Length: 399
Image 1 (cartoon, rainbow, N blue to C red):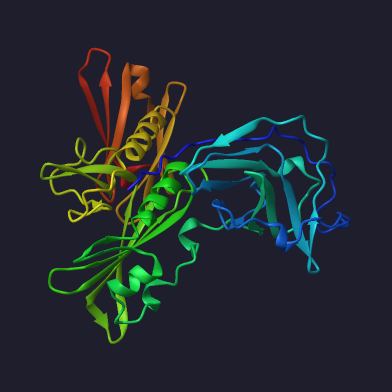
Image 2: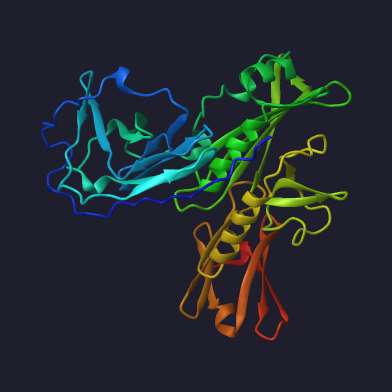
């Protein structure tokens, strides 16, 4: 099986001011009709998807991903159209000024990238409604749609094309899951492994994603798990896991439970390293004995190698600690925001906050943060002489 290597390409076209001062309600839409028809768009091996389904008025930048599912490289450049759907027609939104000639990019086979689109380059303010980004990739036309609404959508509320777990029939099993394209583990082996790889791709790029896994337990029970990668709009990681077990049913309905994790990590199971979800930057090095974690590559599947992806995410998280870091508690709602500004080190929990002397201003290099309980977290670091640093914060005592 080939491993998909994630390539992060960030193309952020330079910012510009809005071209007019009137409100959305006051403006008259006189944009020209798009020249593109439905038959123009390619069904090639390139997938183009928006990162979020719904953006809000505060989002001047939206993003989409490109996934090259074929073996050969494809090229694209900075040029694209932003179009608005009104009265049964797509309208092309004019740019405020003609852009300079953009750079050309190459997306290798079996790789993915993330592309940013600056909405302030267009004739705004933009009305709420349905939009699409249109661009040429590999010589073929592609599009991705999104909604501009009065508020953003949390990634936990996105459907990702899945039916809700509780709506699955009570006799749903691994055979159904294989046919539906879900990552499935049954007695005969592991099926639809590409679903796990696509999920890892999106996590690597910081794009919301959902993975449904279905497994038959030794006693014949069917275990279903939905894992939603739901980063917030500041890019902080958050994974919501919903479970259903055929041994726990209410009549013909699945009873579900939930867990929330903050990091894609590595766990050591026996003599093997497995990809998992945890509330620790490294479950091997940081997690105390008995700390909860969630395996993405189970013991029955030894050929899933996502270590490179995990190592990159871990490195990014550690670097973020020097300035600002957010980690969610075990209940999925409580969180700590730790931020360094000058010589101060502050943290807040809900509306409460506290500020003290920054550990790194005392010669401490911050390393990681991990939860001890739903109301307590530890901060770890190292002094310049090599001695370890640790301090504990009780979230409930902040004022």
